Image (tube, rainbow, N blue to C red; front, side, top):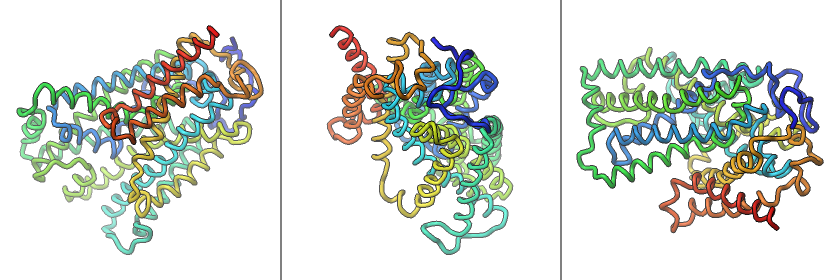
Length: 481
C-alpha cells in the first residue's frame, strides 16, 4: 500500500503552484486543521438564516413538547456525527477529497457520476445562498443609509442587485486566497454569530420585561400531546435534521483531509455537532419565545424580528451576523463540494481556481434569477430528488471502504485513470453501478410516489442503507461466481 508520506505526484492529478487546493492528496504541511476548525465547520453549517428558521419551526410545527424536540436534535446530532466520522476517515487518513474516494467503489470514471450529482446540488444551493447573504447586506445598507425600495429589475431593486454582486465577488475573494482563508473565515464567523445571537436574546429579554423564560416554557409545554404524537414528532424531527445535513455527510472527506489527525477530526465532530445543535437550538428557541412576548406572535425568521425592533444598531450588527453566517454555510456545504466535483471532470486541466470561477458563474445566474424565476417554479422536488439519488452512494462507499477494503486504499491507483486497482471495466465498477441504480430508484420513488409518502422524510437513510446492502450482496455473489 502506498502511504500518504511516501506518495509522489499522482498520475492524473493536477498541480497547483498557488497551493489553493486540488484533488491531489494534501501534504502533511497542509493538514493544519485542529478540532476547533472542525468544530467551526459545523457551527457555520448550522448558523444560517434557513437553519435558524428550520430549528425555530421544529418547536412549533411538529406538535411536540420542547424537551422532545431537544432530544430529537441531540439524537440527530449524534447520528450525523457517527456518519461523518465514517465518511471522513479516509479523507483524514489519505488526504483525499470525496470525488477521489468515490473512485475506490465506483471506478475512476464511474466516480464522476456521484461527483457531478453532488456538485449539481451544491452549485444550485451556492447560488441561492449568495442571494440570501445579499439580503443581509441589503439590510445593512438600508439600516445605515435609510434608502428604501425603488424600482425593481427582475424582482430586485438597485440596492438588492448591488448587494448581490458584492456578496458574489466576496466569495470569489475568499476562495481565491485558498483554503487557509476559508478556515480563517469559518473560525471567525462561528463564534461571532453566537455572540450576536446571545445579544439578540438579551434585547428581547429586556423588552419582554423578564417574561422571555416564561414564554419559552410555554413552548416546552405540550399538555395536549400523547405518547404517540410525541414519538411521531421525535422521529420526524430526527429525519428532518438528518436530511438537512445529508449533503455534507457524503462529502465530509473534502474537509477531513485537512485535519491534523484522526483525534482532531473526531473531537471536532463531537464538539461541533451535538454542542452546536443544542446551543443554536436553545438560542433559536429563546429568541422565538422572546419575539412571541414582544410582538405577540411566534416569528421564525430572524430578519423579521430584527426589523421589528426598530433599532439601527441592532440592524447593523444583525445584518453583519446574517451575512457571516450565510457565507459560512455556503463555503462549507456548497462551494467546496461544487469545486471538487467540477475539477474531477477534467482533473488534469481544471484547477481549484478554475473550478471556483465556474461555480461562481453558475451561482451568479442561479442566484440572480432566484427571486423572479426559480422561487416561483417550485424546485424542492428537484433538489430532494438529487439528494435521494446521492444517498445510495454514501452506503456503497462506506460498505466498500470498511467491509471490503478494510480501510486500506492504494493511493497511486486512485489517481491512475487508465488502469490500476480501481479502473475496473473501462473505469466503471458495474457492481456498484447496479447497486446504485436499484437503490436510487426506490429512494427517488419515496419523493414522488404517493404510496411512499410516509417514507419521504427518510429517503436519504433508506437510500443509503439499500445502496450499502445491495452492493455488499452483489460483491459477495460475484466473488462466489
